[in-house]
Length: 79
Image (cartoon, rainbow, N blue to C red; front, side, top):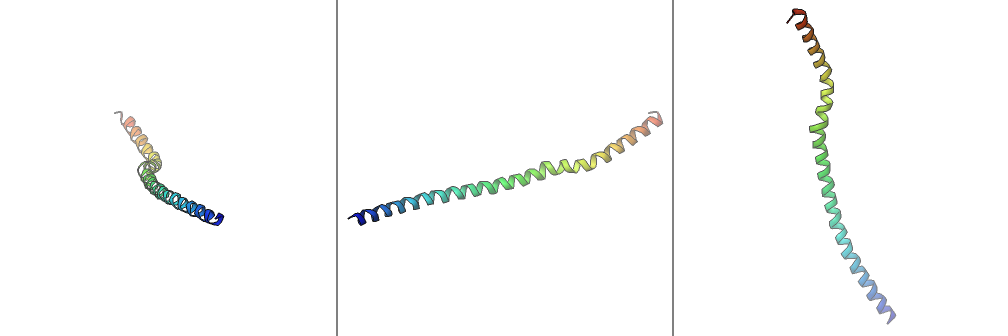
């Protein structure tokens, strides 16, 4: 009789464990999907926001030099 109770208890625990495992797998799938979309959004954000800012750092000094040269030319011509 005690063995039968133990077997019933083990069987109940295994069934409960399988149900919990199934729930955890579903949650893991959702988390992976969220992480995948978060990575895609991060890459797009970098491409749209950060890259132009970095490229601007290279072109701003050249633009300032051209602007100051044009300003000097205008002043020397008296315009």
